Length: 121
Image 1 (cartoon, rainbow, N blue to C red):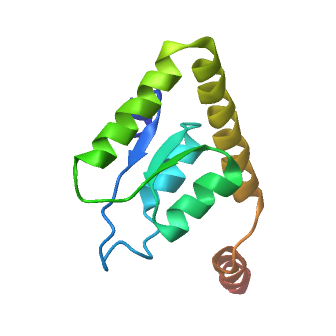
Image 2 (cartoon, rainbow, N blue to C red):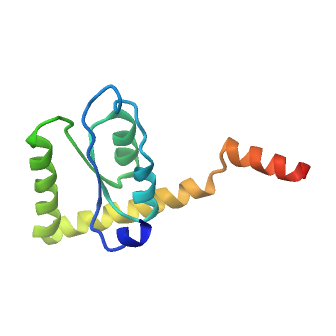
């Protein structure tokens, strides 16, 4: 999947505001960032926070209607239609790469646990 993503402009993370997705942190968000793709995500708390904090994309309003599609289409038009838009896209992509690199440098408790188990073997 990462090979296919390498030619993309951005990753889309467009989940509806439902109880199942309200607190979700989809793995594809990390995959998009790891590939250096800017992300367009709906405004759900956890994933929107990552995109906003990293500067790695754009947050559009969450909703279950065509307004989400219209918002995404406008972002894509903005990115493609002007030098400023393309510069914003490049800035988001660079932020995605930096965010992914920083995440790789941080060791998680799971990595610490795996190293402890490996040391026992």
